[in-house]
Structure formats: structure tokens, C-alpha cells
Amino acid sequence: MASVEMEIRSDENALIGKWTMHGTQVSLDEVSLRISQLIEKHLVKLGTDPSGWNVLFKDPKDGRFWELSYPESHLQGGGPPALRHLPEADVKANYKTVIGK
Image (cartoon, rainbow, N blue to C red; front, top):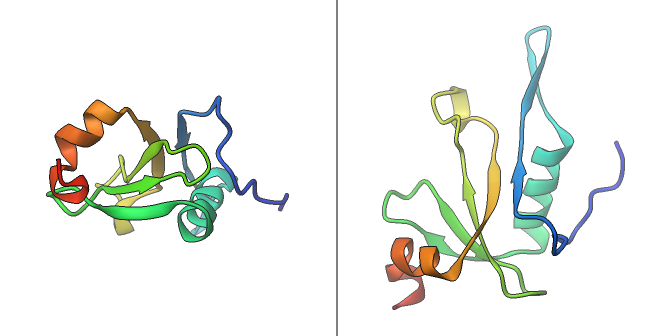
């Protein structure tokens, strides 16, 4: 596997992971692996939305907010991850208890 890019580029607004099947084995694609590395080693976790399923992060480099979600949640284990940039208005609307506004 190629090295994982540990920062989010300024031109990126969404990282959408996928799962691939190899026989009976499920594998994460490189985007899913990158998302995992970003949330573990680069982004700062701020909290979850009221449902508890979506997680808000902040990029310490540029201050942008990012939401981790699982859009294919009907799949076993919640499905592959997605990381999307959230405008500040959406953060204020969806994460009031997290940011205190």
C-alpha cells in the first residue's frame, strides 16, 4: 500500500471510503484507511451529534470542521466511513452541545 497522506488538502471537501470483497473477506480501500489514520493521528475529536453516530472533528492545521459518518449504515459494522467538511453554520446547527453555541 502507498503511504497515507496525513493532512487534508485545502481542495478536499469529502473523503468517501469503500469496502471491497475478496471472496468472503471484506477489505478497506485506501480512502477508508486514510480516514482511519486522519482521525487517529491528525484531526482533533470534538464530540458526537445527538444521535451518537456522527462525530465532529477539527483540523488543527486550517481550523476546518469535519464530520465522520457511515452513510451505508445498513451494512454489517456500520459500513465504510465518510469524512466530510462541514461549514460552520452546519456545525452550529448540528453540534450545539459540542461547541456550546
